[in-house]
Length: 317
Ligand code: TXA
Ligand code: MG
Figure 1 (cartoon, rainbow, N blue to C red):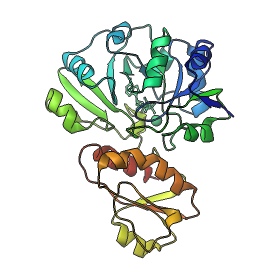
Figure 2 (tube, helix red, strand yellow):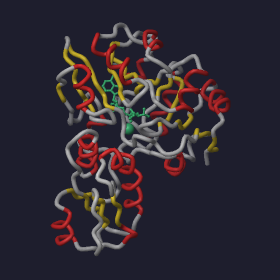
Figure 3 (tube, rainbow, N blue to C red):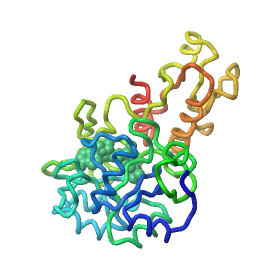
């Protein structure tokens, strides 16, 4: 199993030696490697069982250091980085050739973000290279929001996990690209459309769900539990499937369903709270003895849109 701890120097030494380290971020845990070391990057694909056509994003300590890795920063990207970094926002920008092809799957853009977590910030400042890091889960499965989640699934394959506690946001970063002077959202995530639009005006949402997507996180089926997940009106679904099903409710507990297979995302009704709990609760229900998971939509506001996007993909089989 991987060692788990808060030892930055140990993480630095492993990364310099071309090893992988599980790292905490505010969104989800990442599986990090030196982005400039193609052999280390190749390990990410093999440990995750990730297809090589699915590009990785790189993590940097601050907005200033992004210049080293990208050719140009459009005005809107500059504004967004200034306002929301460190934070749950990934910018797709034209890469310099210093970033290996393997990282971007040969694309001429690179996804880049500055994560908002004190341990990982310290780590990024201590190394001289950016960290390539996808979410630290096997390809297609639910993303990890604690060191224990990473340990359970990838612990056999990596030496160390930096333990930064539970992820504060709980859902992956919002991915935004630029075409001419327009901003295109390719993945809904921890930074809401409302906040994006307040900063740069209208954005176009262009989520892609095809076999060869711009962002394979946009694959039709992704973020998925092993059990079948069905979404809709919970009370109607419970009548149809019976109370042996596991239940993921938004804010109201169903009294007639056993506690062991029921989770309530946000008793307060806050979509932020729901995002924090989403992936951990999906994992717990996936481990329950129920044959199936029933879930309901959350309000389509703020980060609720990203939650509904993940639920939709978790339910696509
Ligand atoms: O919050 C996050 O973004 C987390 C943490 C660890 O930073 N990372 C994450 O990485 O979610 P990953 O690999 O699980 O998802 C990144 C998504 C993938 O769906 C990938 O296809 C897309 O970003 N992506 C990366 N580079 C891209 C590029 N140049 N063009 C289009 N999509 C890209
Ligand atoms: Mg992922």
